[in-house]
Length: 446
Image 1 (cartoon, one colour):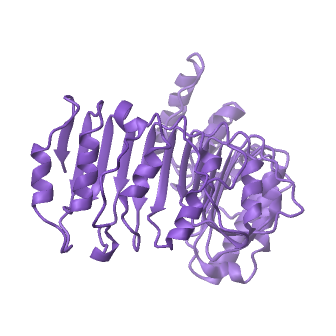
Image 2 (image 1 turned 180 degrees about the vertical axis):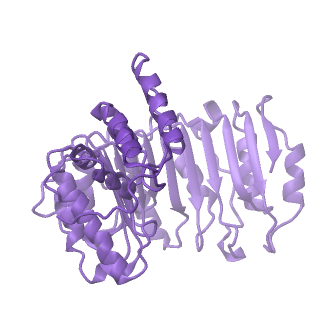
């Protein structure tokens, strides 16, 4: 096992030490729960010299008077390196440090900017995570963020750390790695995981893996590439308790195009979803109350767009919908109305438009629909348009809401002038005087 070196072991003058001790003794005299000072109030015991050996020994003795749970809480406020430097105080502190149940590592914060520092960083993680003293303790949270490309030399240690966390019954696991590495499939059979956040990773094939995440409530996937699109479906199916799902740029090497209705099972516990269009089938998230969809208006042939929306489910529980149009997208309000028809109880609608679009991306001849979605006429109370363009299509959509939303209370327009040749001041000024069917509606410009 690699020993972590300590600098000056004792770092506080006797007056501060007595204040620190008295504070905690005072807390101990109170009825539980104890009041533990925040990190800024905990004196650093490792840097300032003490004048005599007797005072140093007295300070250690006073700390050792505390119960293990109090000392563990003190250690939890310290950075990981500082916490392990306390092991020079006594053998008891060695055990306390290895019993820490939260480990968050960041290569930049640890000063990793060259290969030698990277080696030391790996050695530190080995010493902390793989120590035999630590294996008997559960691990509540393990976060690893590495943004340097030293992984290319050897990234086998990453999966070793992850597998160790799994064996220690980790509940919260977050991985952010540059460049991409292939993640062990063992992570998808961890019965204790409650939170899983993966960024910039490759997922090995799950063909022979029986995904089983019975306690998982939060799943965030960003820039994650699966071997097969079926593996993503298997991951979703194996997370029956999922409440919070977030995806961004989830891709696969093989597999058919994702469609809105191309998924037979709905996540019945799901409350909140933030997905990029085409990442996951809409049917999988149709039970949500809060939905964010990015990548609306994709610049794809109409056949592909229509194919995706084929079999689009009804969002029976949805009360808040946020839509984002991004670069190189087509601003088609028909797509929005199509979504609204499938959200009968929607109360809040927010639409964000990309400000740097060229005029060719605007639908000029958008017509008022012949029908009004149930949510607009009966439930919608808030509507926000971010980066409203003073063009006819945007004007028509806003007035369509104003004249049909009987319960509308807030219509918020975020306007930013652009170089769009289709813009006209008229499509901004006329909104002030446009009649509103809801007498309680407050129209504001930001």
